[in-house]
Image (cartoon, rainbow, N blue to C red; front, side, top):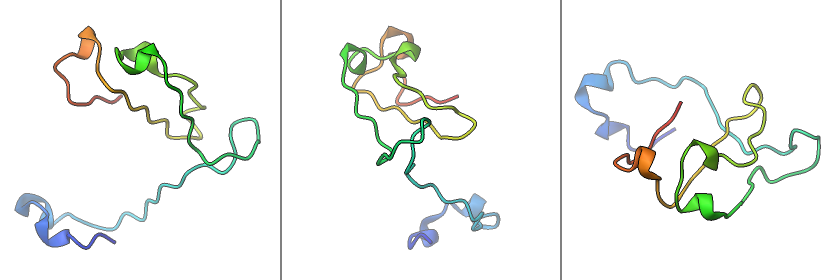
Length: 84
């Protein structure tokens, strides 16, 4: 669905494919309540982030949890991003 497929790195052009995976924001939270799928929680952990900054995680077998932070703490000080 991307219009920029011509800019795929040549080494990967032969294996690029539509895997038919779509991500959508949740319409119901884990308790069955209506939601827009986004929890905005600002705290001190937003500015000095580490693994404890993952506030309000939803069950990972049903939802893809994504957290954004302003700055990483000292444990990840040189990272641009990280994931599990």
